[in-house]
Image (cartoon, rainbow, N blue to C red; front, side, top):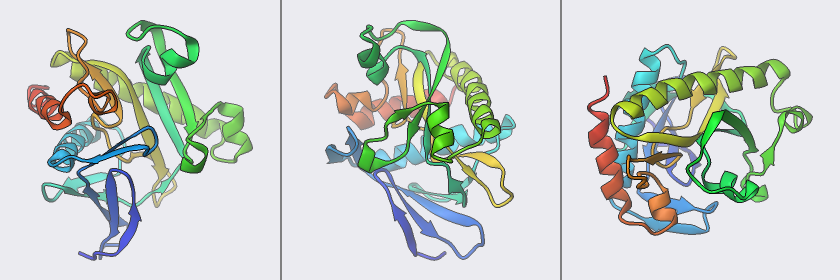
Length: 235
């Protein structure tokens, strides 16, 4: 394996490998919030996120969702297909929470009549602004057909994830996905899926996600460990 660092992100480092079209993702122990304003090193976080994300992506692959995930190769490392990331954060909301509640002045935890899909322009310098379909086309990020696919695929993924988490007593409040173009020009799911990029609440409404860190509600790795253990019961 090559150790050529291609990109260093908030939660992962991405390395080139000796295999064409394959990259190595190394999960960090770093936790960040508010676009990097709050930042801490939390021992064990990288191992848990790698486990959880690998587990979810394996299940998504098995369910017929095209993803970049190949295999987990160590406690912190996994191999992924190299993709050209689309500079959009695709957010799906099943319940009101977070920035959605603030934006519209509504309390958290209201179940939406139907899931809402939102786009955010992936640009740290601009603080990842909320944008609509017309903005996406103006910025030449995606075509009408690609926008429709991103929404449809995100809704399909939501149905799978919501069912899996329901089985283990967790509500999937909302989540963020990233997609990219593979070497054949197909749009596939990329990045990760962990409590870093979703909100999970238990039956009592306790946060089982990165809001524990954002809001100072407890020990992040304690909560992530519970999520990991619960995941083993999914059928």
